[in-house]
Amino acid sequence: MEGPTPVSALIHAATLVTAGVFLIIRCSSIFENAPSVLFLVTLVGAFTSFFASSVGLVQNDFKRVIAYSTCSQLGYMIFAAGLSNYSVALFHLANHAIFKALLFLSAGCVIHGLLDEQDLRKMGGLLKIFPLTYTSILIGSLALMGFPFLTGFYSKDVILELAFGAYSTTGNFAYFLGCCAAFCTAFYSFRLLFLAFFNEPNSFKVYVQGAHEAPFRMSFPLIILGLGSIF
Image (cartoon, rainbow, N blue to C red; front, side, top):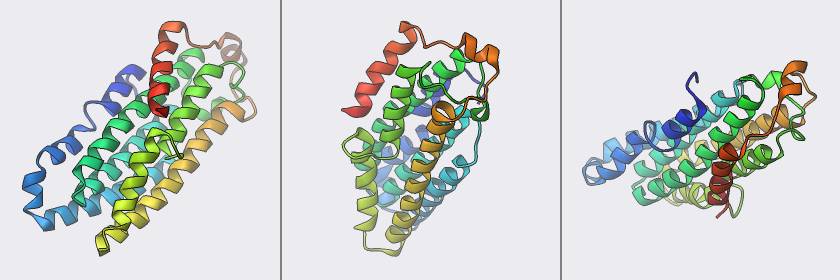
C-alpha cells in the first residue's frame, strides 16, 4: 500500500481490481455454456470473500484493512457471477466503487493530517480533530458492511439472497461463506473506527499537535461520495 491514496482509490474502485469481474460479466455468454467453469468461479469467489475478510481482521495498516475489504467484496461479485447473476455482480461493482473510493480518500485525509502515519496502533482519539473524515469513514464502513438502506445493503443483500435461493450445494456453500465474510467485514470495520477515532490516543505528541482536518479541496470529494454511498 505504498502508493498515494487517490491512486489507491482509483485502482480499488474503478480500474485494476474490478477488471476481472467486468471481464466475466462481459463474457457471460461463454461462461453460461460451461457449467463446470461456473461451479469453479462460484467456489473461488466464495473462498476469496471469506479468506480476504478474515485476513482484514488482523491488519494494522489503515489502507491495508480497506484493501483486504476490496478483495473480499470482489469475492462477492465473482460468486454472484458464478451463480449466473451477472447484473447483480455489476450492480455491486458500481456500488462498491463509490463507497470504496470514499473509504480510501478518507483514509488519505487522516494519514495526511497525521504526517503520513498509517499504523492504526499509533492513532486513537482523532474524533474531535477529524469530524468530517470520521463521518465519511462511518458512512463508507456502514455501506461496506451492508447496513440497511445504504447502497451497499441493496447489492450485498441481494447477492446473499440469490445464493441462498439457488437451492444448490454451491449456492448454500457460497451463502454460508458470504455470511461469515459479512460478519468479518462488520468486525474489522468497527475495529478500524475504534482504533483510529475512539481508542486512547497512542500517537506521537508532535503528530497530534500538527493534526488537522482536510482542506476543502480534499473534503469536497468526500461529501459527494458520501451522498453517493447513502443514496
